[in-house]
Length: 336
Image 1 (cartoon, rainbow, N blue to C red):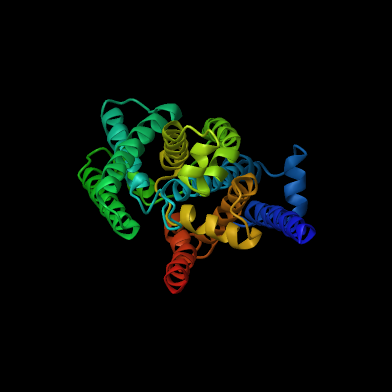
Image 2 (image 1 turned 135 degrees about the vertical axis):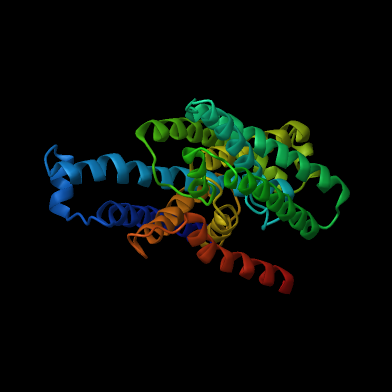
């Protein structure tokens, strides 16, 4: 039994790594300008056509790394929220946290751009974190009044709609052409990423993931019940605050760079639990990170190439593949 479980876990990680490599190579080669294996090799060796070199090194690679990093961050954020609320359909998008972050980032960008100031990556993350915490505050306040988790999710969706409506209002009536272009970002997109953006999100996501991984044992105890966790010496109040902060940082980082991305934070943790047949954080945290990266690489590939040269919003593609998973979860949970 133990050997079978070990084999399943190792097999799951091998499968995720193989899928990650496949979609990584596919994303490098595919696009409006297709690159052959020999051309890619030549570019990495320092040669190749100048235009192809710019496309690969300055456009595609930053975008690919962004999809991997932010997809993993969003998935882990969803896993933390599901642990906090003991609800498998809790996630940053559904609870309105991503929309709150989107609203504050939009306000910050509009104010700064109207004064001719270009916002830094750190400033955008800070603005998104503020919005995420405000939305989370509303959700936590509602959770004290609402006993049924289904109603809490509905309230979260309503908060998301309000924040999205306010964001759309601000973007629509903005005068500056640069501000009007925020519409693409507000729909969710991995395009236009620079190496500076990748470095910033890489530092934030890596540090946050390490902190989350250190919480593996308390998370496991909390999954078995608050009383059980308290008996093991877990400081529940501080632990719950840590879950909220870490989840909000990851969600804020995603929203600051790519806008709101739907269903990844709900669907991927569920898929990982189904694949590994376990909810243990020691395995689920890295699995969610890898699974989120694979899922977003796959969805971004479709967003870029399915209707090329027209690009589809990444949030639309993740909804197409993520929503059926959520529907299945809700039906299966009700039937169970």
